[in-house]
Length: 95
Image (cartoon, rainbow, N blue to C red):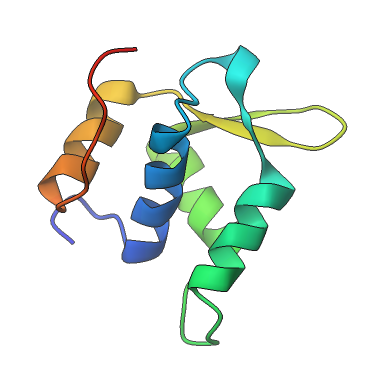
């Protein structure tokens, strides 16, 4: 991938974008996200959910909200939308 993100990491960004998780008050539950991820990428040759999240956190695309159950939101909206758009995903405009 040209931006350094894999198909798995782009899938996570796309879910967060579709659900409009752009603020710390509107994070997406990690267990729900993990369930969707495992359904999409069940094989052993795929990047693990934990590794995909680590990549997005390290690159600054998402931020973790520490609660009883961890939540994630897109913290770098412009770069996330640019990466999704460059890889053929449809993104919503505006906040």
